[in-house]
Length: 379
Ligand SMILES: Cc1cc2nc3c(=O)[nH]c(=O)nc-3n(C[C@H](O)[C@H](O)[C@H](O)COP(=O)(O)O)c2cc1C
Image (tube, rainbow, N blue to C red; front, top):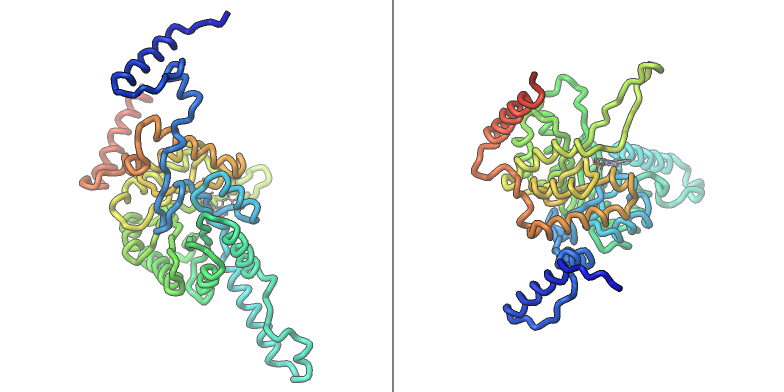
């Protein structure tokens, strides 16, 4: 004989009564509301459409530059899992410069050849197997196979002809360019202002050759990061990606060696990007991307609540596979559904209020956190 759950019956009856009062004649399910929710995922209808760099993305989860964009199959897997966009791994200034120099060498070799020997050389100097052309080739194939935007990543620090490659990235099908200015200032004669200017010049150089949006992926190490971010915004950066992860080598004391140690990230690393996203939200018109430290859907939610337009992830997808993006998106949807929030309402909910002074807001948070910590850890 089946066991009858009295509570469930009562809840179903109450629900049916409420519907009939509301004029809804639909027959109710013989199930408590919590049991109904367990079976029907009511979050599937939650709209996650997002605007990033002026592009419309279906979700605010973006696969950041990394190893999962090294093949068409892999980027397709990311798309199938629901990411809103994919940033390709970086094409480096050093690679482009090398390829350009090789090209010049081939041209010069032609110029010095005897006329009768020319037929032995290809008519067009070829750098077909160069890193640059391989990158462009893959970019073109990926862009053709994807319905979501593909963002190319150009990575360098010095001005020069190499930045013109941005145009080829656009021609190959990139929807936008992420300029990664990974620079550890080793020239101690340079001032902070000069380093900032170099970033601005690089941004201007890339923007001058393309019509697609350009974002810039930054380090947090500027003496007044907010002021610098504002300058980049005014200079036309379409997006700020916060932050680059610096390679901080470790030391193996037994082998007495420096070890490169590019490990995958941990969730603690999401705090610094979120701090700056929360401060910049509503204060710049560039899109804001939180990058670093996503492990579970809660980290995605935190980025949105801080005010990120998109949340980026690499380590989590490397750890769990491309399909894990679907878990992260499902978690975000369920959260919004549970909290009865739209994505727009949630975005920036915990940002520094527009009317507040960022300095005072952060400082009061700092003082009260220290007070709490003293009570907690004090003797
Ligand atoms: C294996 C690996 C390769 C990466 N390659 C690139 C790259 O080519 N260009 C780039 O801008 N960032 C690259 N990154 C950095 C990521 O885009 C991201 O900024 C960083 O991993 C922090 O995000 P996460 O915590 O979600 O991993 C790479 C990261 C990893 C782990």
